Length: 167
Image (cartoon, rainbow, N blue to C red; front, side, top):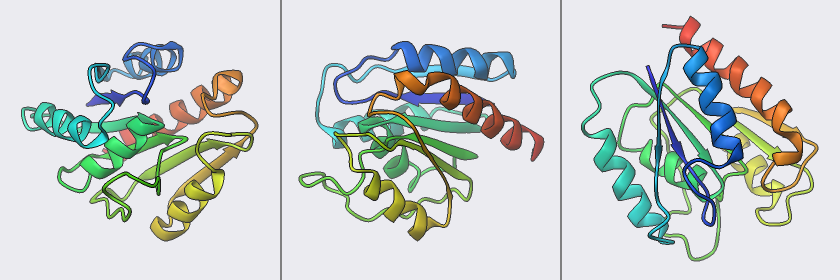
């Protein structure tokens, strides 16, 4: 299995959070790829890039996205078959983003969102989680979730364990 990470709007492919979660994935025997989107702020171009990478994938994979990368991962999951999706403070229901409805083909979706997020309203994740009937973890933390990184890491490890145990 492989984990594909999609970073947020203004971060990079190997920020603190992705490095920490990638190590967890590698320790569970997963391959890891973090897509570099730093050359574009356009979420739809990022979706195209991710779909281009996934079109070549032969193995099972999970999608992991943070902020705009969460939007990118979720929208891409409408066209590919991901085993599972892990979203952190996903940029859903954002004015100006093309997609405002999300119909993932994936049945195992988990969201982590910080109560103190002042960039993406926590209500957006609540709205989507209710619609998708998926797991939602509301935790202490702000948008980057770096202050709650160990909590996020624990949730991600449990998520990966569930996904790999179901195979």
